[in-house]
Length: 72
Image 1: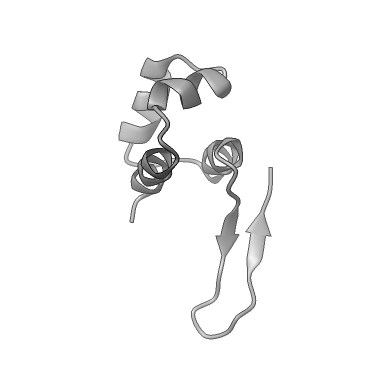
Image 2: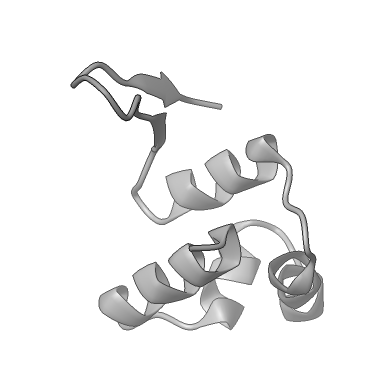
């Protein structure tokens, strides 16, 4: 799953619009749309966006239960 797909899914689950998220991030709706349409998203941008949605980004190894949480 792409970062943008995850963000859109969370927005849908929360019943929120991209516009509301954009305004909370201090972006124009167009700027957020461009971020989500981009083929790449910086980890820092993903963490900031996830944080605004009440989520955190974690790296979880495939072979054990340890995880690394990335916070901004």
